Each structure stands twice: as structure tokens, then as C-alpha cells.
Image 1: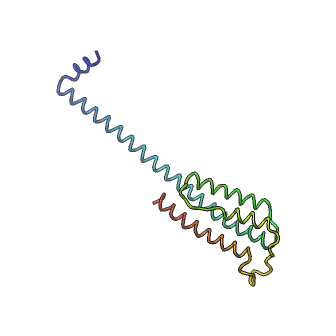
Image 2: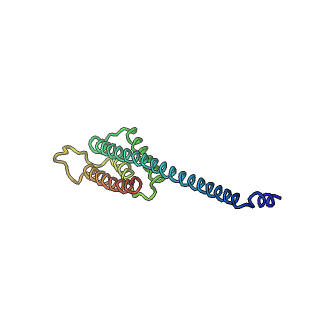
Image 3: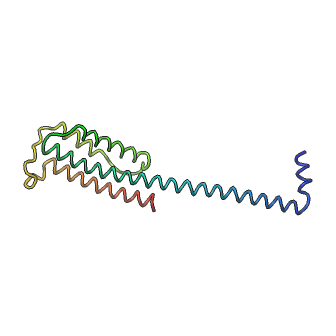
Length: 168
């Protein structure tokens, strides 16, 4: 019944041409809708990744600064505030979360902070630094500061790669 109505309605050439133009219009509209949706999804994902890269960069620099500060506290005075350690661990967790969720192929390694906290807090036999100007370059504070600067350098390189991959 529907097929008979369809054949009867579109039996003339002009009606078939109208049907063809309707079909092409619908096909074009659906195609444009799908392309627009893909473009918007890509753009919003790119914007999200850019904001997460900015957050990751801030957290990495915070971690470096606070790591140096805690390293100084531990090696100069053998005192530290548990809030400082908690704050570093919180930032480490935030960086780990950002990396695992948004940038899983990234090579940002956070083990250095575990080593700093565990080894320095538990090892009270290390000598205190008396004078940083004439201090021993093999002292744990100096060595760890160098490791932190090296870690920051490798993180900067990794961030540059992520920016090239997700921003440009």
C-alpha cells in the first residue's frame, strides 16, 4: 500500500527530480551536521588538553619549588613541617593523575619525590650542612638539588613535546 502510494506519487519525472533533490538536501544536511560535530569535539578536546597542560605545568613548577624547599629544611635543620610533606604528596598525586588521565604516553617520572621523602626523613644520621658556600658537593642536599633541577629539565622537555603534540 505504501509502495503503491510512493510509486504513484513519484511517477512523473518532475516528482522524481523533487525526490532526488530532497534526498540530496537531506544527505548534505546530515553530512554537514556530522562534520560540524566532529570539528566541535576536536576543538573542545584540544581546549581541554591545553588547560590540563597548563595545570600540569603549574603543578610541576610547584613541585620543583616545594621539593627544593623541603630538601633545604631536611638537610639544613633536620626539621620539617608535616604539612609541607603532605602538600608535596598532594601535588605528586595531582601530577600523577593528570599524566595518567590526559597524557598516558608521557614520561614524567615522580619517583624522585618518594626517594626524597623516604630517604631524608628516615635518615637522620646524615650530616647537616654548615656552610653552603664551602659545603661538600657530595652532600645529600646538593646531590638532591641537582637531581631536582635535572628532573625539572626533563619535565620541561616532556612538556614541550606535549605542547607540540596537542597544541600545534
